[in-house]
Length: 280
Ligand code: 2HA
Ligand code: ZN
Image (cartoon, rainbow, N blue to C red; front, side):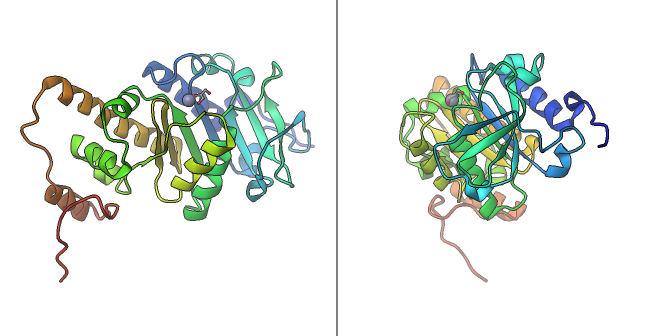
């Protein structure tokens, strides 16, 4: 058997460590808040691990068979993002979904006996739905983005109205998430039920807001997914500033939002912009 490389030098571990540190630094993952899962290709794992060596098998409470055999590096339940960079093998774990989809095998990490994030159902169900619409999909990040959470107290939770406000708060938003955001009702986190509704939204959008809790973002790379959340959170921050400053005198108009979408070749989600389409 060939010599294995030190997994702590693996690009995916470095990405997890840097991303959790950045999210912590931004104040979006206090205490054990937030979780990340990153779909890995087998050929990314094999230079570092004997994939036949299963340390533990942990049951999941839902049918993950659509992900059978797939590998993920995930943050641990109850673990603090700020600690990942100093102790990856305790705070992260590399898991593989079993053939029957009822459990996950732990191949590396969670060295203090830990388990995957409490939001594993939402993550795995989200991966299942995103992979159906985007074969390059790989990442799901959940975090407690401060201004997005704030907005869920003061703004309508109608997802079309919410999406439009975010688009209006920063010119780049409609280009970065032309499909808008999804908003689910307030629900108990960590359950299959919130996982199901979040994943269902993810058929159409890559950002799903959990009112009074946080946000889920999905994407093909860590940069793209982080950037997506960052862009929405920045727009929410502008909303906070605008509300604090007082009366709104002007905004980006629906026609200007459509012009932006046209200029960047993206299609805004139907039913948000009030403009009459001119066809040539
Ligand atoms: O992992 O963020 O939603 C802690 C949480 C639960
Ligand atoms: Zn959370």
